[in-house]
Length: 141
Image 1 (cartoon, one colour):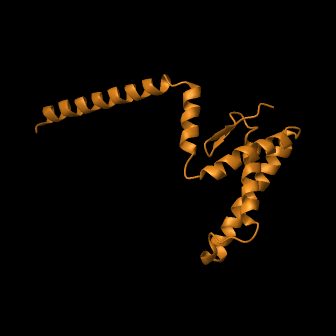
Image 2 (cartoon, one colour):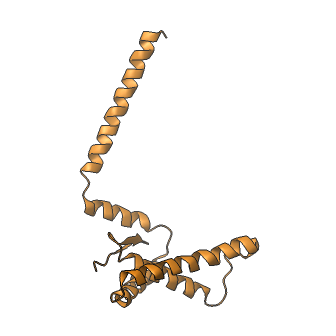
Image 3 (cartoon, helix red, strand yellow):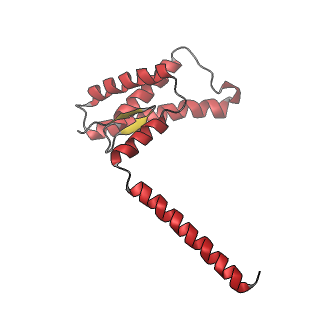
């Protein structure tokens, strides 16, 4: 293949990539905010079992009702606190005792579930809310 032919092939490849990029951009430009949110919710379903998903839907809403009267600084502080609780417990198990990863003591699941639900409740007050486990929570304070 000579230099001129290589240039033509490179130009065709570049033109094809430009067309593909333009088609992709046009598709996303035509997608509404509601469609994007629906896609995020569907994608967030993940591997959560239906019972956990149902209880999260209820628990997060209860925490949102509880936090409605809180000022934003208090919600932000509580959110950081909850993130630290969740991360700390997993980090300690991973660093100190690799064999203990995933081990559960009495009350640990309930404490973790409640921390996640309360944390999602805090995030629901952020602009755009939060999407997790097939749900979208948003509180416009």
